[in-house]
Image (cartoon, rainbow, N blue to C red; front, side):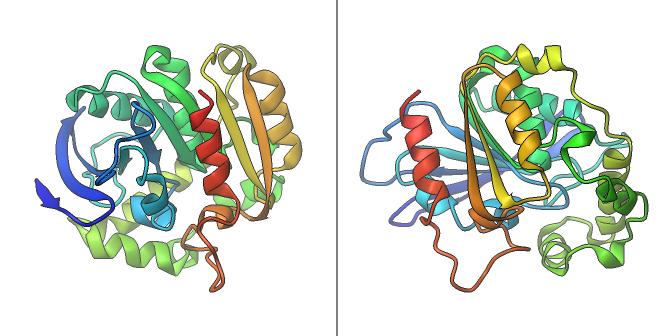
Length: 273
């Protein structure tokens, strides 16, 4: 396990045997001050992404006051692959198993895009593990995006994958040739995506914050539908495109400020739980 200390936060990384995967994780902890909140915050990245491409801009701020655990899912980043298709349910099982291996009995979860859908599946499948959920640009229904999205996914090609995501994968992956496999697995998962049944969403009892950008791929109507279906929810629509509000690498602008909107919203939500 790698262990590096800086002023704020401290950092360590490692791998864990998880359901046939060698699963990579990072842990960030406050330095020189106690955490405000006892539960760690687990970060679940988007499709085709890594911990850093989804959350690299906000991790230093989130980890000032709490332990933050970033995970990389099957076939993504440094985590190995296995001979199974990707699914949000299996990703949720993998995250839950990782936390069990780390001896963490309860956590808060922040998932972006596909990671937001995975976070909701964690809440559905492992309610006792979940303190609260932040579902950022998460998809629950096929109607939650414009119909053109599904046509695009059917025609997805590696050459059309955003360059920053391809470069990030190649920098850290144990097998750079796995990029095509990851791309194809992600595309197939979306082509085959099925709605999360209303009754499953209604079963979520953990406090939930729903975030989207006002120019997001996810429609405002879908965010409002989720807000109505899931009890104990808050909803925030933030200026920006898909992921721009967290500084996600493919939408990052030169004048982006980490604390413009989303970090105070996340901090306030977590501290109220």
